[in-house]
Amino acid sequence: MKLKIYDSKGAATAQSVTLADEVFGIEPNNHAIYLDVKQHLANKRQGTHKSKERNEIAGSTKKLKRQKGTGGARAGSAKSGTRVGGGRIFGPRPRNYHFKLNVKLKRLARKSAFAFKAKSDSLMVIQDLNMEAKTKDFKALLSSLNLENQKVLFILGDKTDSVYLAARNLGRVKVVTADSFNTYDVLNASKVILAESSIEKIQTILN
Image: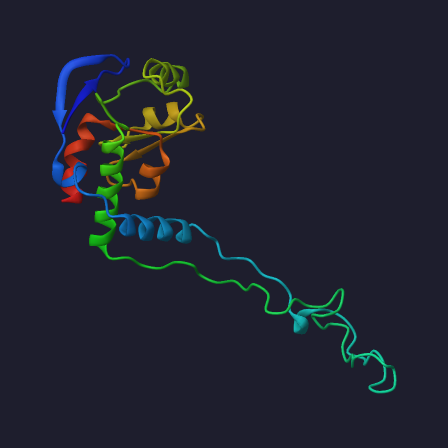
């Protein structure tokens, strides 16, 4: 699969790059994608939810009314979950939502995500950016690529502080490196832009 290479101003150059079919041209595995995205979202959960149960409610333990002769149900505690102001029955407790997946499955999921983007013509390749930390320059680049109103994922070969600083105030743009992207980020973006130096690293990691 061949893609044109764009320069730092957003103009197409005469150069092109060939993407490996083993990474960008496989048949996508939907179940692998599902598991990887599920794990990513689960691992982001704090799990700090908590509600009070009847043994944690402050209140009297005095019996509310006599057992028999009232014509109503028995009532032994104001802290019962069936009464207003009582504890919650089987309420949420703090828990850890993390779970693990095999490395091979996560690798397959990332390949599948790239394959989806390649099929939908949502991949672009750009020359390595060496801009100053100015957001207006980054916005000008997006505008020249007609991406100013789309979710964009930039994958760089190496960490570049100037690019990160230029993009961090743009809500629809995320900048990551070739060794830190995940399946969710790739699928969540309308357009994935690969820096020229990131392609070889991505193909090495996923192969």
